[in-house]
Image 1 (cartoon, helix red, strand yellow):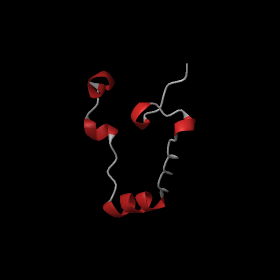
Image 2 (spheres, helix red, strand yellow; image 1 turned 90 degrees about the vertical axis):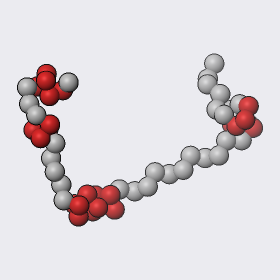
Image 3 (cartoon, one colour; image 1 turned 45 degrees about the vertical axis):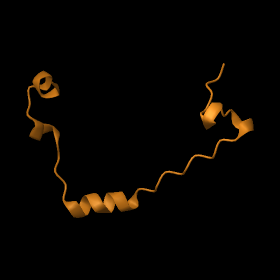
Length: 54
């Protein structure tokens, strides 16, 4: 759909990178921090699910 609107082909939108470049970028990206565990006093609902604000 995007290519139809832009009158181009998929190869015009994508840039191919070597495997070593991709691996280097992934190695530099820090891992996301784990969220803190929910406790009874921190807004946890039944079965430990978060409760939306009222």
